[in-house]
Image 1: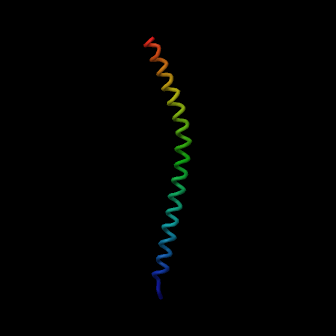
Image 2 (image 1 turned 90 degrees about the vertical axis):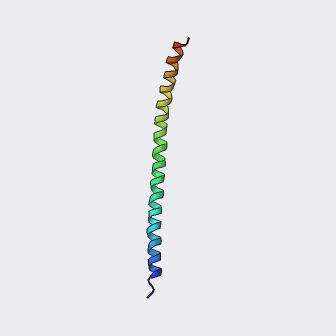
Image 3 (image 1 turned 45 degrees about the vertical axis):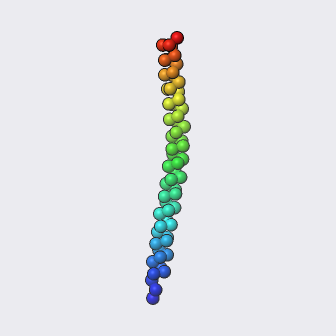
Length: 60
């Protein structure tokens, strides 16, 4: 019997499954970073604007 074809098919299924899992993790991580960046950006921008306003008072 020729088992090399079955072994190749099994390897292809394993690597295909790993590839699908990696793509799902990347997709979930991308959504997480996008949601998190909105919160961080708004907080950092507000804090930066506040710091600029306080510095403006010193240079008037």
